[in-house]
Image (cartoon, rainbow, N blue to C red; front, side, top):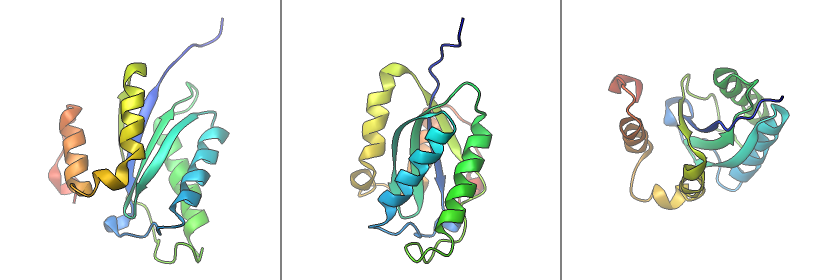
Length: 148
């Protein structure tokens, strides 16, 4: 018998120092690249979107894939793609950490819409406040100095 799983994650991380280095107009190219990385890792990409200073990735995680390794692979491969690319002239690095939240099958559509509507969402809230609210809503203890 095979393994039957449903492991849905929303992964969130920012650029180094939250610098706005994800160039508008080329951001979709980055999202497509991340989608390819997810597929190469046998994950199920459900949505990728973000702002100039951070990303949201909604994906089904393959049971053979370790979340920390997946995030590391996404960051390393996108860094290689973006550094020296004239489409992302200000990009330097990603932040060292990340946040990840699990969601049930019944929550995926809601989270997908949240990820899809990042630009509208951020008209009223910045990344710091968004991340802090997500951590609180998911019952995750944190030290605010690591959110700065």
